[in-house]
Structures are given as structure tokens and as C-alpha cells.
Length: 289
Image 1 (cartoon, one colour):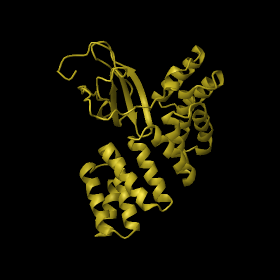
Image 2 (cartoon, helix red, strand yellow):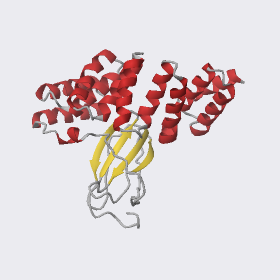
Image 3 (cartoon, helix red, strand yellow):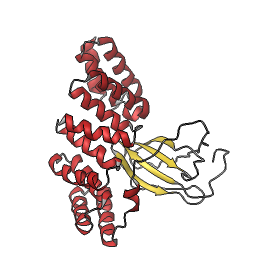
């Protein structure tokens, strides 16, 4: 709590990754929670408390998970001030949470989650397909199926479940964002921007949606919007979204703004000197200098 005391009621904790939600849990009445089998990487933990009475801000904390090392995180809630803008969190839509999913479909969804944790992608996909066969409007299963197919590079296959999910619930953020990402990967930039604009209308503070909107705008040579979106992605997401600085640098190079490109690349190396893009960034800097 803001005064340092423990909670006396459960609150929602969401583990977020680049393309939306990875996991969701609720604390116990004292505020304790645990998320197991989380792969190594950068995540955002988001805590939403007492939404109905608007007493607290939605609070987030960036965490880095490393292999075989537990992470202990303490998050302090912030009281909502009367003059502060209220941000609606629609990353998981009401329809997605309120669906009356048959028990058999839930079991298959849980089987899919277990297979994913064990690195058995094909088993997970098969279980998700069974869940959807049992309950064709299963939004979380449709989104997860699309996301897993996207991760495997099976872009055409990913389109169908994601488009189905967006038709079932037009206000569901995750499927709309994932659909946009699939279309970006397919270089279908006009359609991608339509999906990403819809995602941003649902969740305007999503750094991932801004990142892919910026990549898309750059793809159609709309440099002004590309720059704006990529800057927003980095400003909103911080270090986990420092890749936006690399795309910004490429945009600046293409329009002949060498100094801005160098500044973006140097900022990337300050944030993530050993990141996966660091060798590329160092080569780009050497070429520019």
C-alpha cells in the first residue's frame, strides 16, 4: 500500500511481454503472488488494484528474468490523484475474461500452457486447436494460437485465428496487436497499420503497438509518423523497447540525418550494451563515423 502496509485484499497482476499478456494471476489477501516457469527475458509486471473505486493508479515494474534464478519483486501501489487522467486498461478485454468456457476446452488450454512451458510448441498448438474445436469463440485460445504460429514464422496460418478473435471481440487488444504484427512481417503495411491503429485506439499507451506502428509507417515511407511512433514506443517502454532506437536510426539514415542516427545508436548502447542488437548497432556506428 502507499503507506507501506501490506494489502488486505487480492489484486490483479499481469505479466506483459512485447506482444501483450504472457500470464495473469491474483495476489492473496496479503499481496503475495508467484509466477512460475517464466522464460528468461524482459517483462513488465502490471498491478491493477480496486478498479471499481478508482483508489489506485495502475502500477507497473520492469523485471529481467534470468535462467534458474528467482526474482523477488516488491511493488508499491500509488494513490490516484483527483486531477490525474484515468487510463483505461483494456489489454485483456471484458469479453475475454467473462467468457463461459466449457471445462473440456479449459483443460485443453491448460494442456497447451504446460506444453509451452516444456518447449513443446507443436503439442501446444494441437491442444489449442482442440480447445477451439470444443469452443470456437475461445478468445484466449484463438489469440495464443495466432501468437504461437507467429513465433514459428507460420504467418498465413496465424492470420485465421487472430482475425476470428478480432471479429468475436472488436475491443480485444492482444489479437488486434498480434494481427498487426503478422501483417507487418508479411509486408502488408496498409492492412497492418489499420490493425495497429485499432490496437492503439484500445490501448493508446502500449509501447509494443507504437513500436510496430512506427515500423509500419517507416515501411510506407511516412517518416514523420514513423519517427513519432518509434519515439513513443521508447518513451513509454524504456529499456525493454530500446530496439525502437535502432529503427529510429535507420529512419534517420534514410533521410540523411546522420547526427540523429548516431545519437539514437549511442543511446541504444547506453541502455543495452550487450543486447542482441549491439553488434549491429556498433557496425552501424562505425559506418556512420
